[in-house]
Length: 376
View (spheres, rainbow, N blue to C red):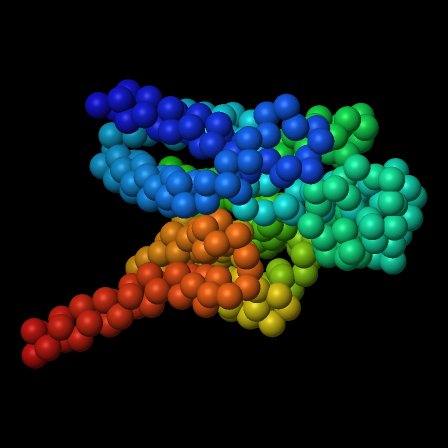
């Protein structure tokens, strides 16, 4: 039974990888030989398939969690699943529902190729650059912190000036941080089953391994900072927390938690680490909810709070986070179907983003009130 499930899962990942290439931009000259245009001409069929992929992915996710909980799977299967997922989705086309990876490359080119300040100079200024044909934020200066831009020098130079090689070195870069995050989470949770809550979450997998978003890099450094906080290694704590903040600034919201722990250390008080992880997740969830002030809620922002799922015990919070990870993936469906960000698309995206988490909260409240009534 185990081998059948794992075999089906691997075939499913291969299907996702092949399916992703339906979304190649018509102006992406480097892959024009395999451009089909189906994602733009057969919107209903493609949207239905993508919706099915999300549902099936969560079915596999729940099966895996159940198997780890019951001891049917152990660390060997965990490594196999993570390894197979990372390897297969590494080859997926990373711009199915987001073009951020092109923005990463363009910003790094501004600094490392053209030797200009990406906070002052937009990619659109370099009119002869082919990347302008298919990136979607050419008229914006750098959107991320200085440490992220410096880090992108690693995958950029490893690409040796070849766009396709560079595209996949950027993917490999975020993949490495995904694996590093899993290692840190396992050290903190000391439990494969709990670690799987984050590592095998479909949103995490699709947004990091398939799309290559840099949020995992920011949260990796934040998590390592928490680890050094626990070990009372102050220099490394400050260094890694600074790195995290200088990638996307969202982890500034974690400063009160770090201050709380340091205050308790100096007062020689025992630190409740369960409370620390709970507050950390809550603060990152808060900044996630506030993100529409800047632009809008994006699915990959959920990585900010999902990373704490293995470390928190609050049952309601866990279920809300998990249902958010399902709902947020559905946000891509309206645009995929309608082909526009206007009209009913924004309303539909908002509804699908919050409907399942809201229903989860209502269910827990009703279940709790029923328990209280029965107890009386």
